[in-house]
Amino acid sequence: MSAVHAARTVSVFGSCVSRDTVEVLRRQGWRVGAYVARQSLLSAGSRIPEGTLDLNRFDSAFVRRVHAEDLAGDRSSRLAATAARTDVLLWDIVDERLGVLELPDGKVLTRTTEGLTAGLYDSLAGARLLEFGSDEHFERWEATLPAWRAELAELGLLDRTLLLQTAWAIVDEDGEKTPTSWGVGALEANWFAQRYYQAAARAMGIRVLHLPDELTLAGTHHTWGPAPFHYQDAAYAWLADRIDRFAAEVCAPSGA
Image (tube, rainbow, N blue to C red):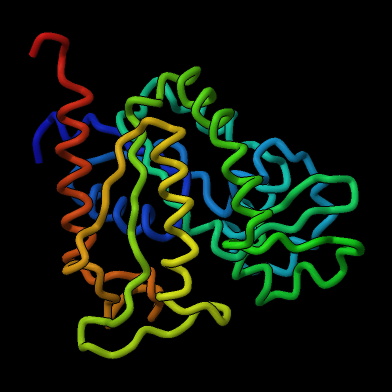
């Protein structure tokens, strides 16, 4: 492990793709700055009273915390707190996959797998679902991109942000078909996601890291179980290597 690697810090706005890649980076000596999970681009800035949802339904302190952070709409402050020491900000859109819930007052919260499993949203009167892939969800999501770009630029993170474009795996390492996630399969999810990635690339002007098709296989022994976005180890090793190269490029002294 080099001293350069040991000094690098990665922050995350995303979920399991970034999370599992960061675990590889940590083993290589990277540190973790901010980790903003379970937040959609659409929910940023929506300050919803924590008591709106019964977060005590969750046994995990981590899950309670990230849901409380989504209700607080605190992405900007969380990233700002570590921006000065963040060498790379990883962004993935996995947390968009279950859409968002719009409350009667127009505020938005992110719909999550933990929340659905716990029946967290059953008591939300008048909440309206904006489904990922729908025209309304996409158009509203796309409309947030200029403000997201401006936020990153203000924080000095725009040139250090890397969007991970990872398709859902259709099959796993053994050639078996991957399971659906809340009724959505890999082919459908990839079809929905394509225009989100295209819009982000157009509007943001940031680097996009596209996982090669030959590495897009689900892992058969993944820590968090089978899912089309839980990849084989080789995928995370490839991503970590490209992130390391990106960091070396963006962190190089001027004129180097």
